[in-house]
Length: 554
Image (cartoon, rainbow, N blue to C red):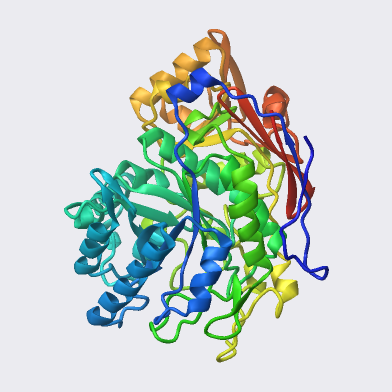
């Protein structure tokens, strides 16, 4: 059937999005029994303004969220007694709303007493809890690559090789997870740059890539999905409405498209950040103003974004049940590479004190090997990402980002800075892509027809699994310098093809080479589609505008 989706309450002056949903969903009962789809939840990161106004609580109920997270130490200087008071009020709120919840933190961990209280009050029944853990926001950013936390993940000044940096960072993630493990609190890692999600997942964190924000959403989800698949974790997504210093920095139609993308790509939990301020003193944060206008302490009005979230929670998801999760994905393309933390630092417009550092080490710089995968993404996204990084933190884009000097007491948004906000676009095509790290085993690569192998190293076991896939009929595309390192003595430079069983091994020093495209074009998909297969079902998000899509399910 075809339907036109329009959130109730949208004004005629509002930015509109039309989503035609072609719903021909055929459930595979055998597959569903093998991989039952867990309950999907969607919610927000609520600014921890206390006391909580009745209008805010009413708006949250109206929007229909089923999950909420909150900070108890919104800044480093928040006293522990204030954190305890915030925690109590927020726990009372989630119980009244009857929703799942988590505690969030940035550069400073929440007090242990708050986590213990959340664990205790979250218990519903034996083995059942509403408390879903501690969310470490932008963990790779604030505690490692550009550390500005009191306690970093690792002492990066001693990292002189990428292998050393990887092992030290993995240990840091494991140590951080252990801090709250004694309280039975799961750990979730949100990352801006989706380059260390596999390290986090290997350490036991739930990978939670940010989407929207200054990011290519489909790319970030493809990387996070691979991390969760490879290490057997849950898969969350954080739809962040910030764009540079603008909040909200993205229009409502783009917001809706991100919600739809995360949902149909099978995430377990999706939450919205940038609903309001978080990293400010607890009594001066304010309401979630991106989603609602508080008229009085009792009354409110949903914004355009609030109406979009209400439509998604109360209308769209209930009327479009999902019979799969990301666990059922059947990838068309995989990228296998060592997590070197390279997101495009060399091209980025970042403060000089940050600069081009891998793993936050002054001794580790970007190289052609760490940057080679940008060429792959540029091919797979039909030129949308470029060859200069995986985010909008680029010298060609970022200078129009943050407003300088800052205007005191003014919250910038897409409404006050429309030209700057218009720089971001949602739609980035992709055809069934997932990303695995250098340790991936055969079972994860089985049945994938096109596999790119790039970066600085892969394990011997992974190389064996890859060659097995080529013998079975897959096309393997190796980065030339890595292939030489792995012992492919037939290759010296340029473009090279060899048969391997029923398949092919292609080695190149240019992933955009014309001859390579002639071998792989049938796998890349269409430039106006984001397409994935899950079990016996297929989902297509087809471009309508740069910020809107129509969804087809088969």
